[in-house]
Image (cartoon, rainbow over all chains, first blue to last red; front, side):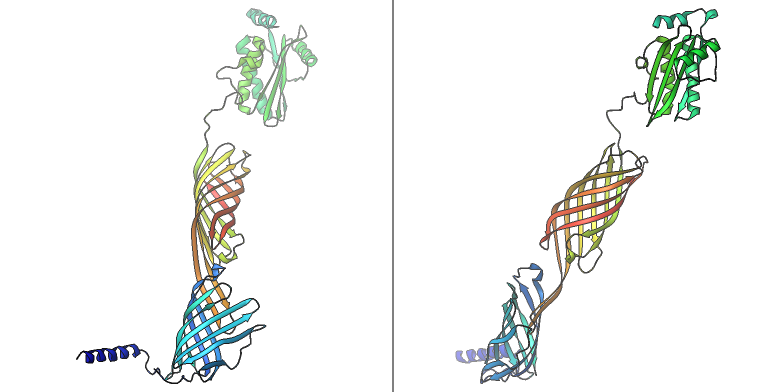
Length: 149
Length: 319
C-alpha cells in the first residue's frame, strides 16, 4: 500500500512543480528557438568604482537575431558596435533550457553577461536570469524575459 | 603771577578791577556756539572774581592787540581767544592779559569732543584764570568734559535677534544642482569693535536636476573696524551641519545589450564645517542694523563621496 502513496505523492509533486510551466517541454530534443529575440530585464548593478552608478534599478534591453545549429546557438547578424565587437561566447540549448553568454567590447569597456532561461514553445517566450561583469568593476544581476519572433 | 591775580581780585569793590572778555574767534565752529561760550565765560569769571566787565566788539589774536584794546576800554585785564575745530574736536584757547603790566596772566587750552562741553570749558577756564592754576587742575564733579569721563569698564553692547536670507551656489558640485536659498535665524551681540552671532541656518536646493540641502548650527565672530552707519566687517566661524542631496542619475553601458538606469539617489550626513564672511554693516548707530555679506562655507563631510562647498550671499537684519 505504501508504494501507492509514494507514487501518488510523486505524481502530485511533479504536477505541482510543472504547474507554472504549462507547455514547457520536459524532455526531448532541443527547442527551436531561432529567430529575432527581443529581451527586456531588470536587476541591479553594484561594485562599481564610481558608486554613483550602483543602482537597484538596472534595466536591460537588447534585440538579437539568433540562429540554431542542433543544440548550439549562433548569432546570425552581429550588431555593429562602433569600433568594438559583440559576440556570443557560447550558446547552448538543452531541451527547453537556453544558456548563452554575450561579450561586448568597445575600447576599454567590456561587458560580459551570462543568460539562463526557459523557453516556452507555446507562446515563444524566454524567461530567466542574467548575471555578469562590466563595465569596469560593476557586477550586474537580474531577471529578464523576451519574445522570440 | 598768582599773587597778582589775587591782588586784582582782592581789591575793594570801589576799586574792583575792570575786565574785558573780547569776542572769541570762531574757526570752523558755529558762531552762535562761540558767542554762547563767550557769555558763559564772562558769567563764570564774574562769579569768581567780582570784577566789573566792559564789553567790546573787537576781537584779538595776540597780546599787543589785546593790550591796545584794553587801554582803549580802560580795562585792567583783557581776555581773548578762539574756538577752532580740529577733526572731531573743538580746541579752545584763551589768554588773560594784564594791560597795565603788559604781561600774560593766564594762558589756557582745552580740547573737547562735543560742543555741549563748552559749558564745562567756560567754568574750568574761568576757574583757572582766577586761581592761576592750569585748566587740568580745575577738574571737579560737574565740570568734567565728555573726554575726561572714564568710560565704563562694563560696556553695553547691542543685542537682539537676527534674520538672514540669501542665495547659495555649490562649488564644483553640478551633480547636486546649482543654486539654493538660504535662511538663518540667530542672536546678534555687537560690541564696539566686534560681534558674535550664534545662528541656525537652513539651505534648500532650488535647481534641477539634483538638489542639495543643509541644516547648520553655527557660531560666527566678526571684526567691525568702523563706528559709522556704513562700515565693513570680516569674520568667520563654524559649527555642526547636516548636509545632503539628491542626485538624478542616468547612465547606460553597452550598445547591443544595453544596461541603463535612471534613478534618484539620496545621501545625507552630519559633519563639522566652517565659514568665512565679508560684508558691510549698515545703520550701526541705530537700534536696528542691516548687513550685506558674502560667505565661503565648507562642510567636512562627504555627500556622494565629496565634501560640500558653498559660496553664498545674503541680507540680514539685526533687531
